[in-house]
Every structure is written in structure tokens, then in C-alpha cells.
Length: 117
Image (cartoon, rainbow, N blue to C red; front, side):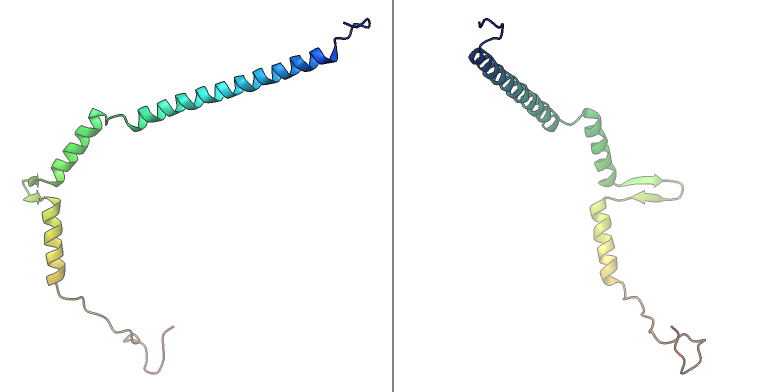
């Protein structure tokens, strides 16, 4: 130490450099730890199996659209499997006549020679 009470400049520089390196190492360690924990959480959420309640609900919905059943027995309303309904609808659309087209001429109530905007 000098007689004036100031610490040597070289010692201050060394302590500053070591402190900066330790601070940088601490920041990098914290960041690596954060990303590792985040990756583990993402993997647990993405690759976790379906909840049983969701699997049961989906199985029930598939059963409803893939089976014959009565919707309203008093009125005689039934449900048919979706594949069969699509097949019947497609057959109905291909065999149905084309809808009649209306000519794009002036309406019947407009006098001849006048056009309707």
C-alpha cells in the first residue's frame, strides 16, 4: 500500500477482472439451468399421454358417428354412420338433376327497352 492510503492499481484491476469473469460465469450458468428446465417441461407437456377423460370423450364421439342408433324413437329419427351418410349424399348429388337456371334478362315488370340497374 502506498502512504496515501490508496490501494495499488494493479490489485484493483485484477479484482475487477476476476469479478467480471465470475459474474459472466454466474449469468451463463443461470441461463443454461433455465433452458434445461424449460426443455424438460416442454418434453413433459408435449410427450405426455392423453388424459383418460379426453380419450373417453373421443371414443364416445367416434362411437356416435360410426354406429346406427335411434335419435328420437317416437318420431322415427335415426342416425347412420358418417361414411354411409357421405356415400348416400354423394349418390344423391350425382343423380339429382341440375338446378334450373334463371335467365339474367330484365324482370317481367320492367317495360321493354328499359334496363334495370
